[in-house]
Length: 241
Length: 229
Image (cartoon, rainbow over the protein chains, first blue to last red):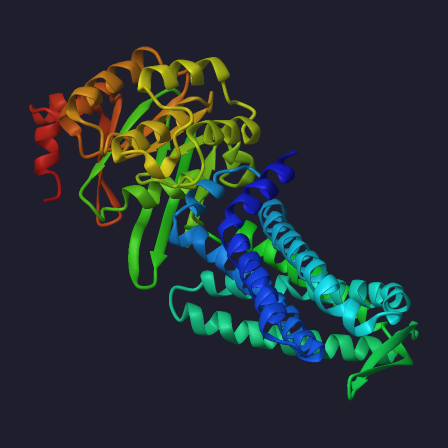
């Protein structure tokens, strides 16, 4: 109940930025539909938007933490007799929820406007496989998000040089994340899934079937757990107002 | 009830609290007095578990200050700490959910007494109304310890007097230990059982209000003007 209340509070806090980004997606899709005739270019535009979404998530999570101090609400948040996993988990869950909804919105717009025209018969074939790949990528991405919590809280605990430290810790976390993923893929038993890549040339679409080893996702899970746990410990034992 | 042993809190090279040792008895109302920057707010935050001491030890009812003591400690900060988009109702519902000692009847009384508009958003409230909300949220709890940081700032003098009267007569739970930091010494001094004067992060003078008045042959307000300055 407490988690759900905090989760709802975080969702509500995000409403403005969510509406802005959702409006931008709709505007962009409308622009691409009205102004761009070539479906391939439309796909590129929508694809670029999809690539930007995870960055929005990281930025939003950072902003959500930062505003606790800039708005002074941290003084209230820290009076609650709860472990840090509740407020931090609620922040993480709400950003993931927003991203999921924005992704669905993007897909909902892209489907009738672009994908159906461009891919036609291949669409059904691709949907299932892309679904699996999407879940794997999304899980890895979500596991990376605690890096924002961790780096911000490390910086927050310092009397000065906060922002540079946040940046450095975040970059270091990104490096460690990539190394853990790499090593997990090499040292853990391989776990293959079939991936069908889309190749588009001269307006015609080719589907190429490939195998992809996704055992790196276990490394991502380990990384996510460790960094979230470390962030909760920082919240519980180091963070003050 | 509240025990502080050689408590230090540094911010870089600044010593906000510098070796404070205190023992505050259960049920006392303590006036925490001192100029701006004397360490009053930091001391209250250390007791509330909102800050970690650089050195030393703080405990409430024998339990080190931490998550457990937050369940019994009610803290009202000096400035608004509530989300501005939340309504008064939202804030009080939050308090009820997170604190087992939240007393709904007392809360209803306080809302009516403070004339708080339940549906208004915090961001639209005046400073005075925000201060009333902070007091309402804190006093609605049957907490063992109440820590109020400048609770009357922003409240007009007439209302302040009414609130001060009500604070003792109506809205204090029995055996509740209360620490109030304030600059409104003249108005509030009749509340205090005990006085703590702070300057430069240290406790300069401590004692029962009556004893200090008798020893120095002046009111607490006059004493406030003399001590340490």
